[in-house]
Amino acid sequence: MLRYFTAGESHGEALVAFLSGLPAGLKIDQDFVDRELWRRQQGYGRGGRMKIETDKAHILSGVHHGITIGSPISIRLENKDWKNWQESLPVAEGDPAQHKAVKSPRPGHADLAGALKYNFSDARYVLERASARETAARVAVGALAKLFLRELSIEVLSHVLAVGSISLTGEIPWSDIKKASEKAEILLSCADPGFEQRMKEEVDKVLRTGDSVGGVFEVVAHNVPPGLGTYAQWDERLDALLAAALMSLQAVKAVEIGSGVTAAYAPGSQVHDEIGYEASDRYTKFSRAHNNAGGIEGGISNGEEIRVRGYLKPISTLRRPLGSVDFSTREPVKAAYERSDVCVVPAAGVAAESMVALTLARAALEKFGGDSMLETKRNFEGYREQLKRF
Ligand code: EPS
Image (cartoon, rainbow, N blue to C red; front, top):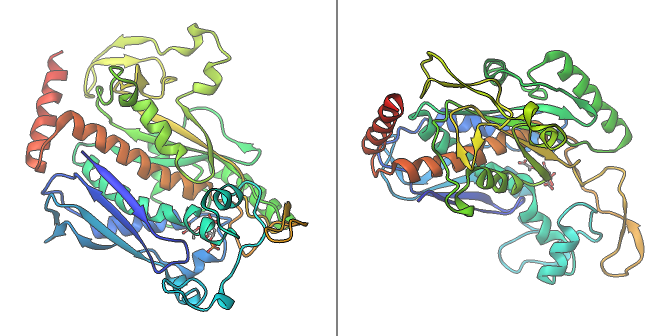
């Protein structure tokens, strides 16, 4: 079974990620992993922290001579900012006078709920772990999941559909998403350059006013075979697993599969994807008039592209803070502010690609099994033949 964990605080020494269950013999492309980490750091509207960090995956175990050996993989990501925090956030007891307390919780952040839960007198330890910095560790293991999926011809990418009120409608073709993802510079990861400019203006507007902005990203998994996930048990449904995976990302407040939201307001005749049969070089010759189902029916991939959207609330750290209460005096004050991003929609999309890739890799390994890539690919090819003969 493919399993993964992360550890690490935003301003601690390092982030760590663990991944176990990848078959032996998978070639690891370090440049690809580091480019994925780079992609997550980009986007118009990131804050000062991204100027400090240059994320690189330092693989500590499970990979030798450039390939996986079937043993657990551990990865370390340095926090360059740690040098500025060693005194105020030491592992040892340290000097309490150096402690940088977060004295008033930010509405929308984990600050208050976390402090109440863990009985902390301020929100420092809460934000250290609740911070989206943690997604860098997910992207490191997600990149390995992507390399595994590539061996099965599956690719996973994301693009941005909305920033604040600027919103793109309709289905963006895979080729446009792919082209946008290859750019050397990442602005807002929108496949439509005109809309991307308008999104940039939206970010500029909130920058000027000390506010923040959310949006919508879409993750697309291309060339997924039919048959991943199952309706047989509630916790094996692929849509449920993807929804949980995306919902676990910081600031995601809603998840949509295909056109799930608008489908709720439309008659069935306009929603369901009519079935045809025609010559094609895909997994089967079955075809669909459109893909409102987002590639999943009955909790199973149906052979169409998987399309999952994440809806992000605006970042909860505001330069012009909202009202809060001082933890110690209980007096009304403004919420704490150190520095922050104002828009992270493209970065969240990259983190979400990792979550989708990890979820699909797990489902693929459950279906095809295998302790070595040779075995996994043989099983995969056998199933592909079976589909062709269906
Ligand atoms: C974050 C706050 C900011 C972001 C951070 C997420 O960090 P800092 O508090 O150090 O300024 O930049 O994101 C990252 C560091 C990252 O790598 O994505 C938060 O509170 O969630």
